[in-house]
Image (cartoon, rainbow, N blue to C red):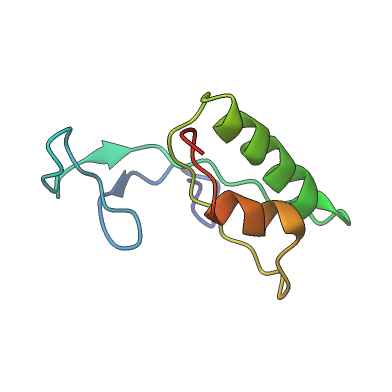
Length: 87
């Protein structure tokens, strides 16, 4: 993540991103990089959701965190919430 002056910010495990080990136990000191994409183009939420849906269905990802300011959820977002590779 970048701070207000463009510097990198190290993120640690905290709500809403809680890291767990393979046994499901919390890892409160986990450190990770966060990538933030700020796009203002029309339809970008649908494009991102569509790519995430394809990645999920092809088992290229196991998790994703998406924060959007869009008030309505396009179809791909709604479908992502009910999808899993086993479905």
